[in-house]
Length: 99
Image (cartoon, rainbow, N blue to C red; front, side, top):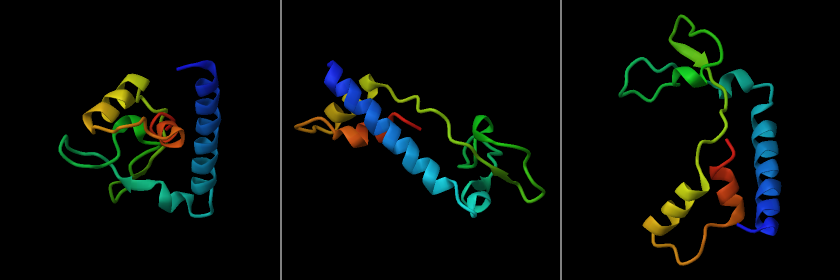
């Protein structure tokens, strides 16, 4: 990735972060960011590392966004495995690799 593409990716990531922050920073934040806590390996609850506080009496917990662990190599692998003729758009690349 050249310097120009790297700068574009940084700008797109900043935009994605701003969108996520704006969406979740609402009076309804407690509702948007509360889900059942993970209790078994097979369930889809909030994993321990994403839990933000204690699990309540009904089994719900606030969750927090974590930094993405998706790498550029993984995005390229995704592009290749899907047989895409061109790279994914920069904004989608930023979305996958931001939070």
